[in-house]
Length: 231
Image (cartoon, rainbow, N blue to C red; front, side):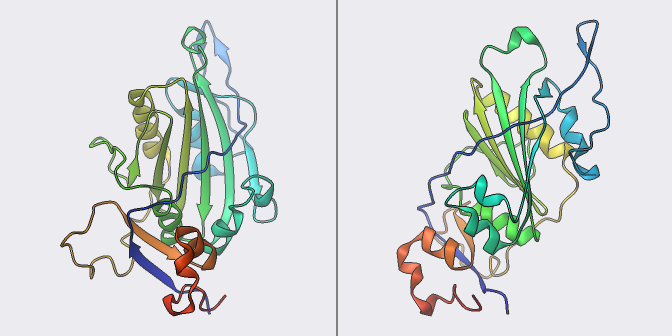
């Protein structure tokens, strides 16, 4: 029997871990960025990632599977695996216009999880709840000048930005949301049953498995919480 999934509102989130990257290429014609050719390093439903306006892939996307995830998310892979990890693509984007580079770059870490619930669970444990959000982006997300996060269907996206302002990150996330495949809107089980009184918006946690529970708080290691059931 799989570990019990538990929704728990909590205001102290984990510090968001900064991860690394490496990514794709595009051709130029007469100073313009040409349409990217069909890529073999991205699955068909993620080909839109090579078409984000104003940005081009740099290098080849790095791909991680269940067996190689520990080589990238050192110390945190167990949480992803217990939620139900499938694949990770790490892509590095540079500005399409050379004159706009000046140290600007964006790294996209895109995790495909076993289900929308698993993707939301990872997302929920990596936010504080007080981060800015954009009315332009309908998908569950948060924004910052150096980092942003988004969950759509079974995909969890972590965006790391360098040399960018928050407006540029917002535009990137907006386009990313449009290019990702349609995803099921997830309302975690039990959320509707929670009392709204004094509930701090965007602080819900969807905790799945012992590793996520203990990282949320050492107090959750106790058996009576039920997080370890089935492990």
